[in-house]
Picture 1 (cartoon, one colour):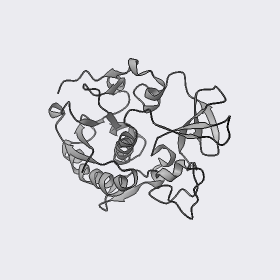
Picture 2: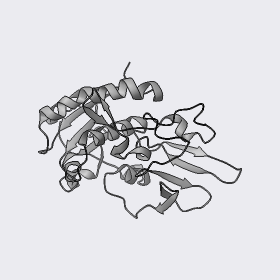
Picture 3: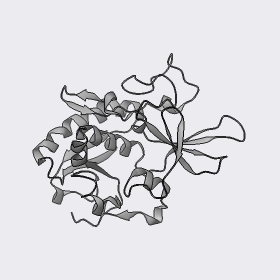
Picture 4: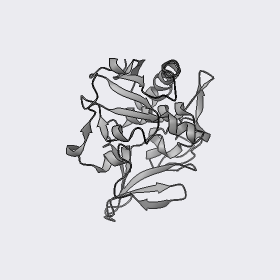
Length: 243
């Protein structure tokens, strides 16, 4: 039985309502067939008109681009303080990316960590350890690793729980849906993960492929999951849109 209800809507001029609605069945297949058996979280997806969005549902909203979304970007949650995922279809088109991969990415990560507060702690010794953000698509987000659902719709790859378990091996575990990752905590080219070294005192850093780490920017892009992870909850701002 689905754990959550997610309403998908289109507020872009890049795509028609019919184009967005047509992708919802493929997203539903990915969530229920591929994601839910692995992570134990399912959802019921439906397409609705923007003015018909329910305050009791989670939202996945397709927008045009990051500039247009600037006014919405600071809206971290819906008007009812529920998760809100944003897809910038215009920006995807500008960079030659498939917006359906972005939609899938945001959907999966919203289901895996809806409050942007879940982490996995790896403690190799009594006095050292790292917190890894529970982001499920960032590590393998490059479109190279995406796969097709229903033969036409391209969706994002995502990691399995074993990715966060340093003692697992390829002989006894699968680390991502597509089978591209061969070991725990491995980052594919173009991938990254938020890491908090509890002994270093440097706060959240971003690790990329090749074990290269870089400190987070003073203020990440407004509305991003990374911004929400570092922003105190009392500073989150709900959407002011009407439903």
